[in-house]
Length: 166
Image 1 (spheres, one colour):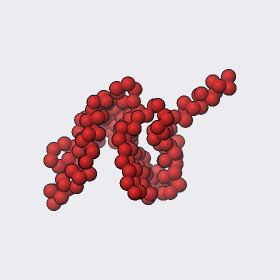
Image 2 (cartoon, helix red, strand yellow):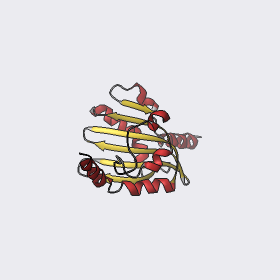
Image 3 (tube, rainbow, N blue to C red):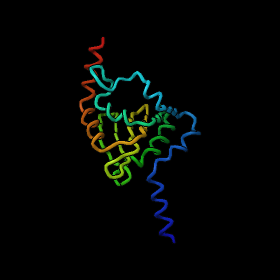
Image 4 (cartoon, rainbow, N blue to C red):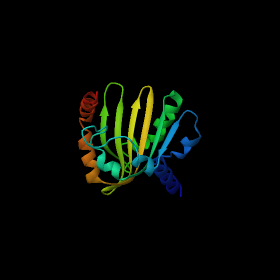
């Protein structure tokens, strides 16, 4: 019986529990409905694309939650909350893309089930800010791989696009 209780706790620890964040002062939570996403002025395709490679994924998004804080203690809570998605031993999540420089880490993580994902997490961890974006929808591995390919080098492309807009 002890073994059964122990394995239940391990499984629960692998989940991301965002409900606990609802009552924490200093954690900003933004919800974007399907209508808001559809009517957004962000450009995901074309010469003026804000985020290259995400066009197909954004068509499949049902809704988005954004969790963020720039307060040290709340950043610790956010890091702990989203840690299960970043643990390589956690089989519920797959790291699809990551980027790290001297003080910024960016992770794109999927909650994969076979070749499909219901949740994709874009996590940005900086010394003075933590942001986790939860894209909810129905995504195929092919769509995800295409988006990841499109975002590699996206920083340079995005900078070129911004300079061309001036």
